[in-house]
Length: 325
Ligand SMILES: NC(=O)c1ccc[n+]([C@@H]2O[C@H](COP(=O)([O-])OP(=O)(O)OC[C@H]3O[C@@H](n4cnc5c(N)ncnc54)[C@H](OP(=O)(O)O)[C@@H]3O)[C@@H](O)[C@H]2O)c1
Picture (cartoon, rainbow, N blue to C red):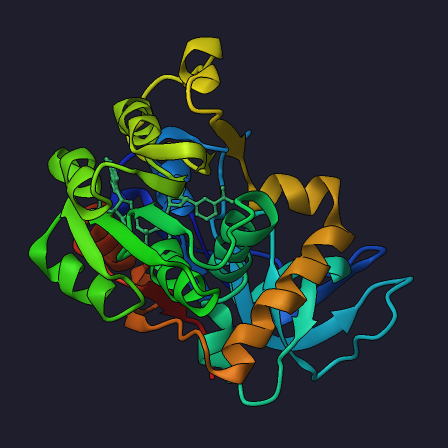
């Protein structure tokens, strides 16, 4: 079968199509004949700097949709031919993908394979950030960084559907601002001006919840935008800054909290919890309160094109690789 891998770290050009043996499912696993794979910022971090790689060669890809090809020993409730979406630890850039059965979900009615490939990472992540971790209540205000990207596009809509008092976003360009404003955001700020923007928009009060995938200086400035009893959830480090540390001085004043979330860590430590959370989140798509817009699609062999688009900070919504179907 064909897969896309890299043998060395670098730019999009290190992604190569390779012919490899078709995998078989082990105990508790299934294999999926892939239709589409979603592209995530974590795939770019893996390729460029070895984020979560371990050893080379490495096959990126965290999410896939397709039809179950084979079912491993001990798997119940899934059968060959069934249309599914799955979150995987790695390896979704391939014609056949191995997935843990606990992370495989039959497609809800009305969700097609193309949409399904865009859901397994960003939908449960945005839901967890707002609800399970961020504990958003109706009427509260939210600030989301990287608001026009995959997670950000979903977070804006979910926050609005949850009755947030106002939803603010941070983006790097005017085109991204327009996209965010169409997906749940009331007002959008640029990175250099978001603290002033929040102060003005909230008349000095600050926001109740900040979702931060950037880290570093952005995270520190995000703490300054929190209202009394505000919460900040860290869920990434796009800036590449050294790991942050927050202590007593920043938190005692105003009774602030800082929390964290990683969907891949949760998939390892509490797969059943993640499954329930994903099912809750999927309802919002099946019911139509959230749309996950696919804004560009590339053939598997041109995974580099997708990485170039996202790495150039011009992508909005979700990018997909078309594998078959
Ligand atoms: N913890 C988790 O479970 C989890 C799960 C999924 C994603 N994430 C994180 O969430 C973020 C979004 O992921 P995604 O896959 O949906 O990607 P994405 O948002 O579609 O694309 C990448 C985003 O990163 C921003 N960005 C790129 N380079 C940056 C830089 N040097 N400094 C600051 N921001 C930069 C861009 O926004 P602007 O150009 O507007 O700044 C862009 O929106 C990523 O940081 C990712 O690692 C975390």
